[in-house]
Image 1 (cartoon, rainbow, N blue to C red):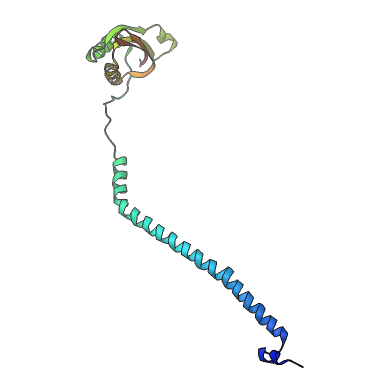
Image 2 (cartoon, rainbow, N blue to C red; image 1 turned 60 degrees about the horizontal axis):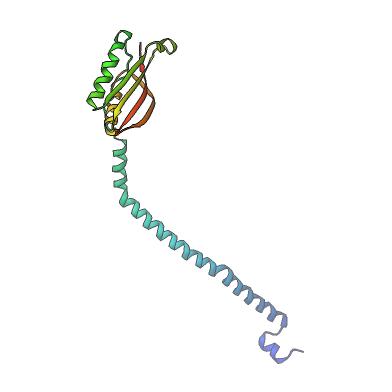
Length: 180
């Protein structure tokens, strides 16, 4: 026979255990499933708010970005005019010395020596090697380099040596000129 308490609780002790297990399972489901889900939703809400702020900032900065991009793509004229490259005719090789002397004079540099290697034309056809040594300061040497860059038959400056001499500097250069 069933006791009075069993009758009040529903009668069967097994049903009591089942209800108790169900309540524990429901409590576990709520504490392990739903509560972390709400916490992750709060974290996602914060992330969404940050992304919205970032989008608004990027919308405000977009016109500035477009303007800067246009300026970057805009072709600027060269700082120093560089002529179209061409070769020096062989019969004009004697003009090399006065050309370098004039450029050195315009740049306030003193010429120590200029030595075109005419014999080297056999070894390097189409290229005339010129050894130039000038004396002065760095600022004037910069002017000299800019001016010789304007020579249309300048192929390359192969070597530059700098040496301190008394109160100035001595610049030795090996310059290659295109010769036809």
